[in-house]
Length: 123
Image 1: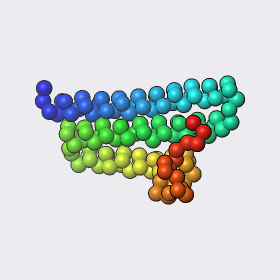
Image 2: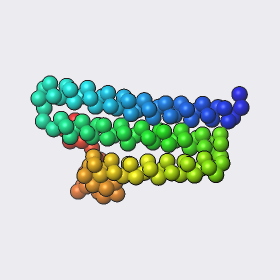
Image 3: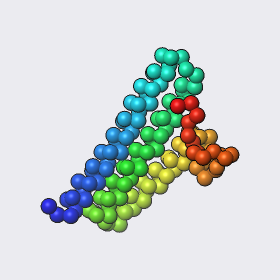
Image 4: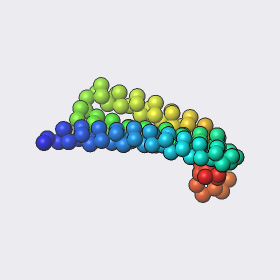
């Protein structure tokens, strides 16, 4: 087996992990929300959004890593690098907007003395 083929397989595997993270995150968030609804807990919607947002933020990290592996190791052309740059830029904008949506503040803004920024309080 040659290096490019192995790198392509690894990149596809990392992509698969990214998709799995999103799917499992959606399933876990939904099951947790249903359980909390059945118990009539407060703040179900906010916790559900936070959990969904986390999986939506984490999944694309793996997808971009897979793209980087394939772009650098398999097909390092100007077109593929340019496409990767656009993908990374879109993912970065998406991450910033989701972080703002989930926590109510920009990623570079610190909370007042909280050790874990964006950590849910009701989970």
